[in-house]
Image 1: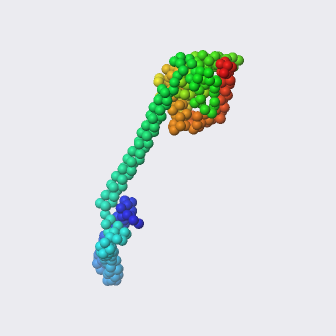
Image 2 (image 1 turned 90 degrees about the vertical axis):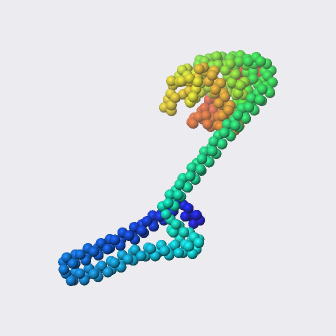
Image 3 (image 1 turned 135 degrees about the horizontal axis):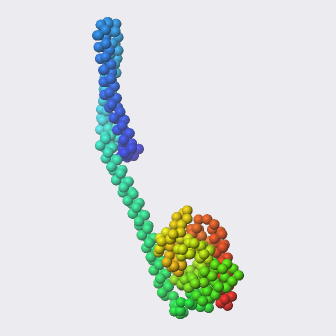
Length: 340
């Protein structure tokens, strides 16, 4: 029972008990006295000796109880006060009862409110501190990536050259690691898409003009061009769905875009972009930062399976399998096109 006297809820109960006793101590004797007066007046009015005798007998008992109810609580309060003083307030219950007042209750209530506000403030400060720490860590990662990119020598300034370690690397797509380069030039990826479209879905040709954007995304963010292209092919039906046509949104992204989008479904609206190239750039940045970088917000590995854990809510196996199938076939054709 340590410090129980300093608890608002407990002390409130003690105060209510004291108030109840005080009300009983005053109200019940008054009621008994009123009954005594009523009986005596009734006997006098009736001028009945027998009734008067009974009234006197009953009144004596009621007077005794009235005095008892008034005196006993006072004596108990006096004894509690004496015992509390004698024990130097060492007895917790006696101290609580003796010092319980409405002023004390209000004071404790205010203290508890202040403590709660302080605790909530600390929680908010801790939350803000974690947010700032995450932002700082993100900035550090971005700066490190930027410095590494600046330090990595480029074999040529020609934007059409492959973005791998060399321009002679094998055409590549690894569904288990999308940070490995495709080793393709814009021209090679264009030829690959064109050949992939032969005898297949004619919508595939919608991606031919986007080959430079996919290669640029690989150069800028280190994401395999075939990999991100295969994701967008699956998500947008090779840029044929309404969201891709009207809003240049190839991935079903929601939230704030760069322009309004009139397409929506039962879950809400989608984000719009000024061009499909702009969307690919934003998408690559988001994938790299949140999904493919250790410590990122949704990082679960560098492959399609890891991305799918937070990228979508259902149909993950179908998503991974279909994108892997597109990417693997595309990489096979790329090897035929490049001869490496």
